Amino acid sequence: MVLEKIRQSVWQQEEMPRHNPLRGDTQADAVIVGGGMCGLLCAYFLYRKGVENIILIDAGELCGGVTAGTTAKITSQHGLLYHKLLKGLGLEGAQKVLAANQNAIQHFGEIIRRERIDCGFTPCNSWVYTTDEQNLPSMEEEVSAVQKLGMDAAFDRKTELPFDILGAVRFPHQASFHPLKFALHISEILTGAGCKIYTHTKATAAKAGIVYTEKGNIRCKHIISASHYPFIDKHSLLFTQIYQSRSYLSLLQGAGTLKDMYVDCEDGGLTFRGWDGMILFGGYDHKTGQDRKEDHYQGLEKEARRLYPTANVQYMWSAQDCMTHDRIPYIGRYNSAGENIYIATGFNKWGMTASMAAAEIIADLITTGRSAAEDAFSLGRGDIGLQAGSFFKNAAGIAGGFLSHMLPPVKPVCTHMGCAVEWNGEEETWDCSCHGSRFDAEGSVISGPAQKPLERLREIEPS
Image (cartoon, rainbow, N blue to C red):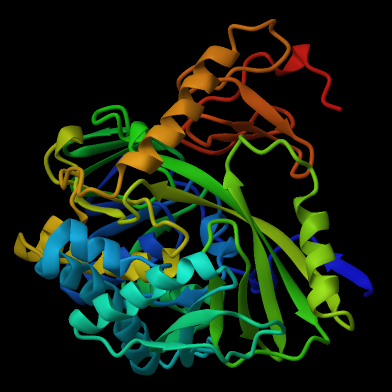
């Protein structure tokens, strides 16, 4: 295998339009904080529903964060999820989650056709597979549950994968696409319709009726937090309800391609999809800041070499995702932060589908006051019986992070809640093991919830 990799995502070959920062105070009907797929789609849905004065801001460039690192699968198949939801939420609640995800796939197709967007949108099947016999009962439960929810799922043992599996759950009528080509066209539609987009404009705080930024303040009727991690999180202790996970991806040339999309049912397992005659291949997930091994890319290359010995690795990149303990995103009213404030976070590695679902739910809440799916995704939905194991496992990690900075001061301390940060030599970043904040080698914030740079980096000599 010849390694000719570029350490960025293949999607970033598409150049997004540049916008100016905000200059001074202004006002709007709706302010959207976050210029990734979710923020752009929220703006698009509000525009289509007649909201005229929309402002979208981002701390960096459009789609420069999570959207640029996605696998770009548009699917309602989020692991082996629905048999658990059926037990935890009941038939009606589980149907609402599945319907929101299936509607998202349909909306992508409708928008792409209506706006004539050339973004490689490709209908396909989505598969969750296993090579472990112990997972077969869960797979059979999943097929039965999804069929009860009204969808045509199936169990099979034959796939395109370059190895034998013991079984897989297939969802038909899913899709994949090029996310930045899609996002670029949406941003052009928005600016053409009068939506104001400001980049390099960091939101620092918000309350009902106003968003505070480093470049000026924006008075508004409605606020949507569509940033990867909510920039206003202390009101509801949301950081105790979500955690962050990293994963690693590559694009393989010379390995052939795949018609469908695949993911292992195990956490940290492998993911596959075709793109432009090549294969997007990834895996090695781990909780941010809590896996000190520096061989994730090497491991991915080694596995690619084993599965596809004639392939060349063209691109390699990593992604970070917000995870919820029950695997359902938090979408809807953020009442503890103030009236007419809305939130979308915790997309659990399925950000393209969840972004579209969030845009529909939040736009409906703003324009009509209600959404058919709002209770299933609400921040106040409570424990549905799926959270306990994940919560206590991750709470232990959080507690360890809080305590570790009491040891001799050889590591910087996160400016969010005082946890220790670990040096990630593979990414050359400082990663917080509690809530997933990331800082560059100089201590500047890459991703939140932290808002301020590290204070003690000068005392450390990164190795």
